Amino acid sequence: MYSHITIGIEDFARAEPFYDAIMAVLGHPGFVRQSEGKGYGTPTGPKVFVGPAFNGEPVSVGNGTHIAFIAADRATVDAFHAAALANGGSDEGAPGLRPHYHANYYGAYVRDPEGNKLQAVCHSRHG
Image 1 (tube, one colour):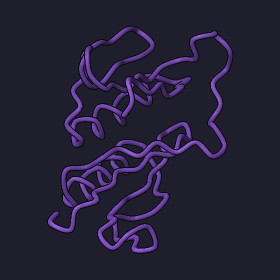
Image 2 (cartoon, one colour; image 1 turned 90 degrees about the vertical axis):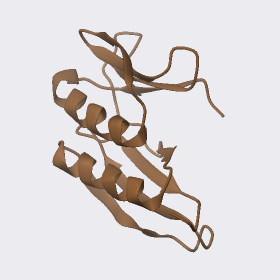
Image 3 (tube, one colour; image 1 turned 45 degrees about the vertical axis):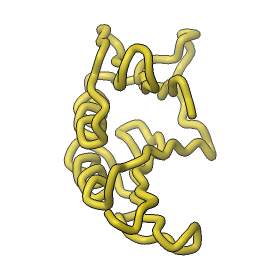
């Protein structure tokens, strides 16, 4: 569905433990690291980069921006939420069913340490 996503981060030292934890839960290993940023996923597949804005300008949280990651099962959604909160994230919606999307929609919402809104979602009823 996508090649890569870049999430702007001003304080990488604060954000790295958060992203290491949630990406590990989701099965996206770190594959490249620089002093101010990191890439998760695979070099030739879908990936997520976190770091400063490419243009060198200050990073700001996108109003209305929301990135949702597919989770293999509901336990992974629960683990994503717990890992986020344990590593400097904040709760934006506890894990649970959201039947207003569809009958099996199970998701959790968090904000990273800088305010970016992230989600993990499982669409399977067998999760």
